[in-house]
Length: 225
Image 1 (cartoon, rainbow, N blue to C red):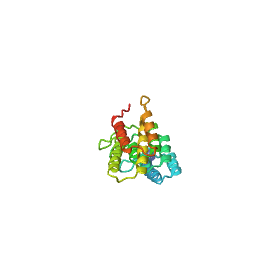
Image 2 (cartoon, one colour):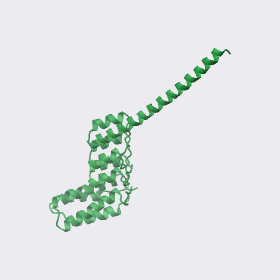
Image 3 (cartoon, helix red, strand yellow):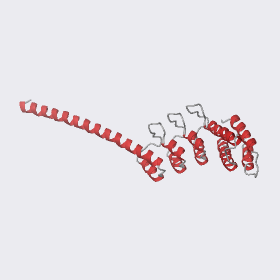
Image 4 (cartoon, rainbow, N blue to C red):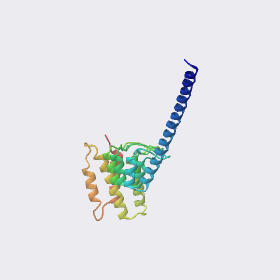
């Protein structure tokens, strides 16, 4: 091998090493950019959910945002939409594969938040998508137990005379509807009595206190398979 050939090989080796370093740097830069882009799309998706912008949510999901992405409190896009009552966004996220049983840092599922706000349409969407009404939050409460707590507060307010009949009727009908929606997910449950109770709430002078006591017994004895 001539001296010039040795120099040529040495130069090639240095060039190859330099190219390798440049390629590695380029890959790292590309990876870093991909991470930043993913974070930006995620942030924009959560923002679009908060604004009830269904079209934008659809766009960011198409760009690769995960339907299960969450904020720093562990609240997923589905948690946010359920808590705000945005049923169209909830439906879209579920259609795109969002997990209806994902938990936030307080162990709430989206169904817990929907039960708190008594949003029946969202409760129904979540249950049909496989939401588990038996899941417990950080305080040991299931979505049904949250409805029960709401009913107990309602009964106390009624007995104290601090709530009007029209509001009691509306709240009771929502709680009955929640219970019916949950029980209908299991074919062995009979909801005829609850349907009758719902109809009786439309009577001119229903025994509201008695109805609340019956409903509390239903909630306390409910079994979900």
